[in-house]
Image 1 (cartoon, rainbow, N blue to C red):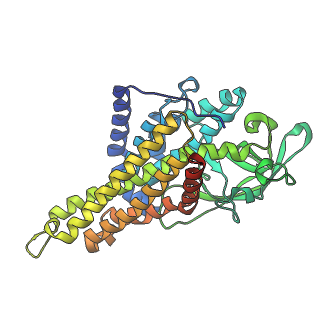
Image 2: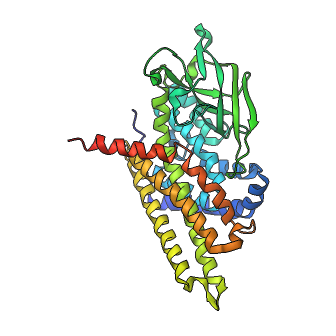
Image 3: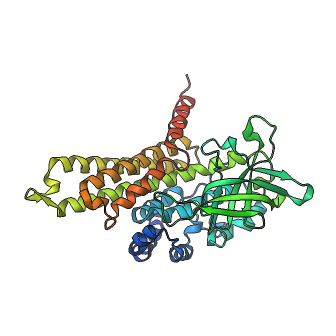
Length: 390
């Protein structure tokens, strides 16, 4: 497995980038998030601003036109975006997983052709992995890419729950190129798939939360992809390539969890000082104090686990266990904190006038996305044994 490039950033440069992100959030995200979320409307203007400040190239190397940020800085950006509106972070997450797969495993020709266009957002999209009958078990995918001589590959199949699929235009597409080999992952390949004839967006899927971002079903009917778009140029390495990229994706999910957990905490701390019952602010009631203490502890523990995973990724180390731990804990922290925030706010937490109900709807996705939390526990346990064999 190819390690990610080791990147560093000077503290003053990181501060400048985070300040730019904060200005974007205050001016473009916070004033519009609630209305766009409730209308389930795509944030076109925000996407254009994200292009301008370089977020679509956040983790892409500077030699290819990106910002070349280490995962530690990227995690802080995602935390801040999710603090304001989680959907915004999803627009860059899947896109940068695709970019990471090309940057780490692509041929030099593929990198030169695609990474600069990914970095500007000219080409943007995500990863087409999940299928109607296949979620976490990626080896069970049924989408097939059949080689046709020198004319490339013909793809047939369907993908489900694909982020950025309606407004995006390019995807890392996981397929079967050999149906006979065992184990199945040896017959799986990853392609750079631009939209074209035979590549159909079948329908937009309605969701409990995570509104404003396009999540669709894709159908491939005799879709042709050039042979030079096979990532790395060799068949049979697709699952390894995309799983490597999912380490960054799980750090992103963890950072989103930190953002939601922290936002739920801050809203609750503020409200607990304004709301009075029985003649005093509710923060003076022990029942509320216990909730606030637990919420603060969860948020900070999630932040530290996420930082630990991001630092390991930045050092170029294998970090599936660290990313799994961060994703597991931070996503559960987001769910628990959003529910506790609703209880602190009472009826107002259930109202669309406050952001708590949005956090409550958004948070459960984090326990499912980028591999379920049940899968994370299995990964953690297996790595514990593998790293501590006697």
